[in-house]
Length: 97
Length: 301
Image (tube, rainbow over all chains, first blue to last red; front, side, top):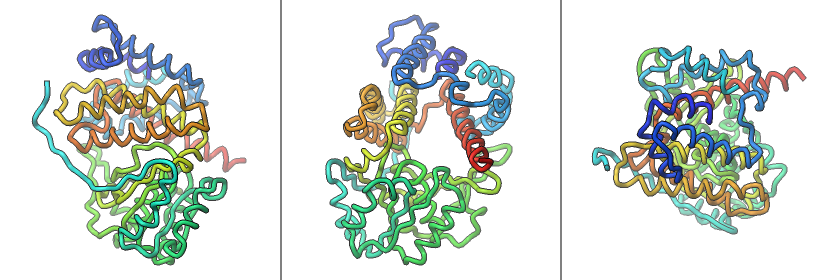
């Protein structure tokens, strides 16, 4: 989640500002995604939860398959915008691994 | 600023919560004029906990049968066997006992008991271009009671998913008539889930609650539920490691119910900003790939 927030949060600055505000994180709007990501990762780390896909036992070679299935998720992408962002989403998955 | 353009949909159900909540199960079965209740669950909850044995004792002659082999992927083969068992028992009410996948499995059992068309004609279709199409499933369904062993948004929703054994493809159903008539949050039942399962679920609930705080267009009904869902999830998270404490489990059950209520009140099941959309798509894809790999490894062994 942290990787996704840091990489894509700037696309929805109002939403990020609202989340940061609700969490009590005072920050400049541009820094909100980073601050939210830091907070969530701290919460998960305190529970002993993995933060990277590699820690979940996901093989790096399976990431292209994960990407292809992700591109067809209608609930997440009702306007079919993901296909145009294939390269970026692929890089994002690699970053999260 | 609020948006006043919205639609609210209400679905009646009774919620029984707390210590010995399950003691009200016989009355609830009776209230629904059922005489042949049928339990659908997984092996672990049936064979390694006392929940189902307790329900057998409570229901007595009201219980027509138990199918306890729904697997964790809700495979089509396990659902087909459950349907056959429920039909043979002449079930007139289905009780799902478990977490999300079993609760969804119970819904599919009622759909397949009632609908007459082939399964492939009942599932949601995903055209290459355009929105998903969920066929109307017109036949009346048996009433459903859900007994939770872990917090889940599946507790009172209408969507369900099973996995085709042969292709590993997900098959999704949507039928508002599979919303439950009653939900049970019973202390002992909730304490049966292992902490690791609760931890994973809690992280997902918390994640969604935080991301939903980013909604930029609220109607006046949903804001309170959204904030309270987040407060409950955030408050429960640090306490879930204590396997003997039911309180955080109840609070997570409440958080998920509020998340569903937000959706029914014209809000969103999940708010569609880019980080949430990508995280949701990746996570559902990872679950699909990961489970398929794990099953292949298990089969190879």
